[in-house]
Image: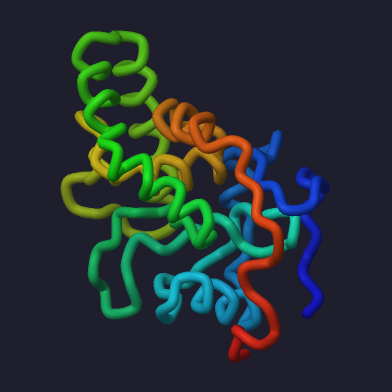
Amino acid sequence: MTQPSSPYNDTPGYVVIDPNASYEQAATQAEASAHDVAVISAQLGRPARGQPAVMHRCSFGLPTVVRVAPRLDDGTPFPTTFWLACPLLRSRVGTLEADHVMVGFNERLTTDETLRDDYAAAHERYVAFRDTLGPPLDGAPGSGGMPGYVKCLHVHVGHYLATGDNPIGEETFGMLEPVKCSAPCVTNETVVS
């Protein structure tokens, strides 16, 4: 299987931040190809939903983060715009969640004014970006607990890798580094195109 290359990530097996990650770049990504949808579905272990678009790739060229529409095909609101597809990242972030890292972030949000303000500002940009993808969701809900608390680190890491704009995601990704896998998580044998 030929994988698209990752121009910002040429160290085999590693996941790194794209130095050009931004909302502007995220807005320009087209819907995923049928092959990428099949890869994403294999990575997730279920059919990909929400018209995914690949926002970030690992050095093997596989999707690590996808952008999804603010509403599913049946109209159901879906406030999580950026979704981790990479099984290794999902597992590593899940370990941090099991270790209750969110508790520390939530405590810091009550005492660290800079973090609280930066997090709230990232939430506002996130919602504004999501609103460009489709009709605004009622009440402008955040995702992953934004803006008042931290509920899901997966959302924050995906947001950070896609746009470079999430202080909780940035710190969380820093806790994960280096993120290295020894081989592609998806091969021709695991993808049904």
